Length: 190
Image 1 (cartoon, rainbow, N blue to C red):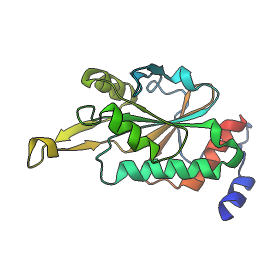
Image 2: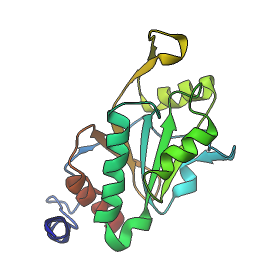
Image 3: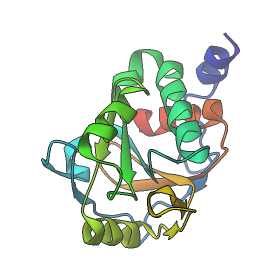
């Protein structure tokens, strides 16, 4: 109930010039995160243009991540609920940084845990590295006790695109879902 009241009062926050004032970092016009070309779990080539007309949130992670990735994905699912009637206007894109272990089947099962409106992308090592470079995302394999027990260090932030497909917001890990929902509402209203 409090979340609905928060959203109702914050559908559009504007500065003096009428432009939205976001709670998270406004990166409108950034020279990165402008393109994305990776296959989805069915092998279909996908790009940011596939989700024009929706606010799209891009997050790089991996399915065996113990904390940041499932927390972020759960928060994005919570945001869909906070958006109410606008939930279908939000697209979550999960890009695996661990294509070695994150098979198409594993990714399908993983994203299904977070409800509708989530797509997983899985490139090969070179495609993944190129996508991460375009978004200025860091990731590196950290060896474990056995060859298959490694973990992945990685950037823990999301990138939010407006319905026209332009990168607009940088959201660090741990951002309040209710606050991000108000920023998304602004992008939907623009």
